[in-house]
Image 1 (cartoon, one colour):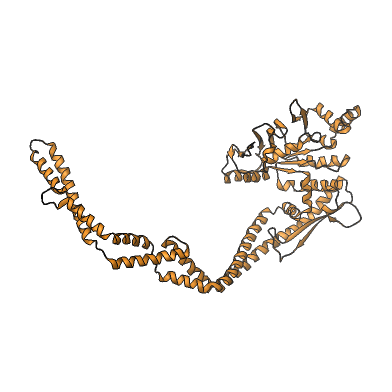
Image 2 (cartoon, helix red, strand yellow):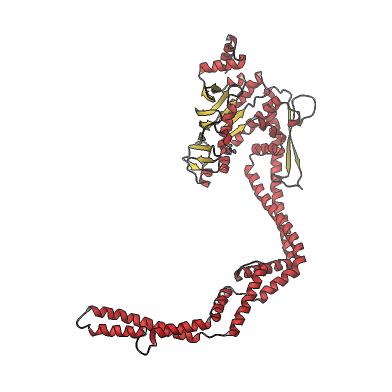
Length: 557
């Protein structure tokens, strides 16, 4: 759960450092004081997109950091899979924005991606703002509620895996049928290309060898002349001035003084080695020169073969024999598929049908559990809504199943129907419920799924819209219950009935300075809470009646 929040240079907040507590807490303040700014800052920690315009004017960067106590929640897998430091008890998320538009994120001081923030945030904190009431009109949200209550996330994950495989095979089948139709029309041309490459009898490394041989044949006379000249310089002089002759003379001179100058023996040995090596080189040069012959017929054959290779490469838009060989293999495989396309397509059809059967079986299990859970949700929602000023409430979960139409969530569509009155039939909740009724329905749904989801922290941003009096107090009681058992519920509210039931009370306010307007949030003492709730009851001017009423609200058990 959220232990501490620090914000620097974000919107109207210059510096904020506030501690939060388990259980049910409330945040109050005038409209425009900065409550939505705090929600926006927390949203950035959950991976929302950043806007450099959110940085406080004249500041170069803003920093938002939150510390979470996660000792009661099994998050080890996330940290292990993402190679992040984790001590098993605490998690720190930090987001930094610069005026230049750059954004950085960290989890336990390790750089993290926004997708990692979102994945972790979904396991740490849920922010319910007023716009989320619109979700009641979306069937996928309603179906998700049923799956959460039914506790069949693992089954749903298995279904999605099989459904993905089914759609992949179905797509392969469709592509195979289309390819077979197109390829049969092109079969003659493909066969011509494959035959042409096969007739060329291509070999890896052939081109490089032929190019080297062509160079040698074209310059055969120059090569032969140079090799003979080099050999003659080493050993063919008649007056002893060739390299080997001069080296032999040097050895003889040194040998003549070896009896009187011992160092000469080492030089003689070294020069002997040189003499033997040079003699070998000279012999090899002579032999190689004899092997080099100008062969115009062979040169023509080599160049003709190279022209064949170059023509094929240009025609097919490649640069090597190896690429031509790869192309030849691809063509042969295509022709093989064309000749066996009917068998291949039939095999794919069987795979698709088999995979569809597996997927449908899981969808049936999902559907059966959803229909069982729908009855449970109907009963629990009515029980939760009755004390919220709806004594005649009717709540229905309608599930329409279309087995022939598989979707990523099965073949069910869910719709919540609602009627707050005795008369009339329930209708889609988003079409018939008032703003206050929708707020109460959403709170009841959140309370219903809170245990199944087991989120450490839930923040309600003005979920009390459209309610007042005793209904507000009952909504606060529900949030109190949700805040039990190692869970944290924070409600941003304008209603004194809700504010009075919080275990901890924070106030957001604005301060006008000479040059700026700043937002602050502070925890309230018992005396300050009385004053704040009295202001919520009576307005700017405090009355004794409001103070007495505030004290009475705070003493409500």
